[in-house]
Image 1: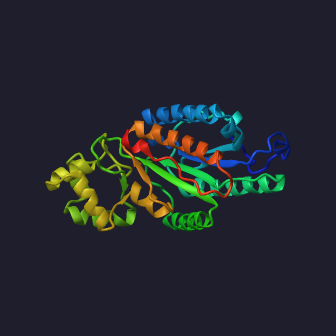
Image 2: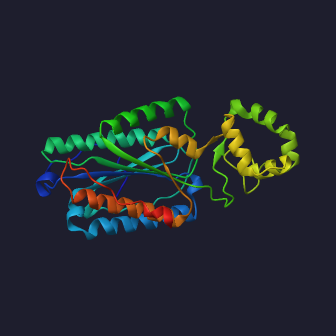
Image 3: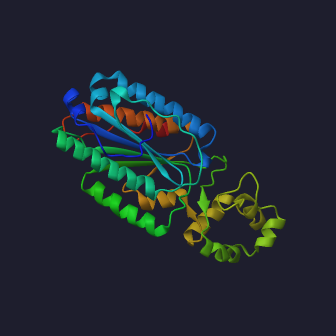
Length: 298
């Protein structure tokens, strides 16, 4: 697959060569800097297995159309490719994290692809979208709200089935990824009864356990005689902190799933490939029961 500058423009001759009913799938994948290392390596390996599972079934290979949108603070599109020809790109981490842009690009891309099916006289199934992230969005809250409304409307109209996943904190301490927006920083200092200078003196900035804000919440919790998890939960309840799961929950039409280890990450991609196979074996309009999400047991 290669990145396309012009998207949503398709050659109708492909439907003469392959008139099979189509199942459009879009994988919306976080490639921000925090994905570096084992997470991006596991994701790349999982995409290769996804390709193999799609291809090993001759019906699925002809009916699945796969697109990938990689995102950091921007979104780049690997446009729809039929499953028989699908080759995953090698994803590389860089940049920050923006949710709104890739989701809106995905919805635009899906609609353009469905229009090409209609123009080509080809039937199609409801689109599947798989969204994966590991961090906090840096979007304007107003943009996230608009995106959430659009996504909810498209899902309600059965334009897409949107499944979202978040890879938990890789610190190994069970503390969720979080951020403190600028306007809430004074409230945070008031809550903990300390100043920025106090936290610097305690070594609570710039350690290996820092969050997106540069704050080591574990050290702050030690100062207060509590746990990092309890401190974050209290700050979330009082509206001082936002967690990645909390932001994704507000955005996604259905409940996001948290992946707590890399085996679950790989398993979620395999679940998607099995779901695509299930859909491809049905008839458009059928009520389909997707495979059980056994990846959560990994």
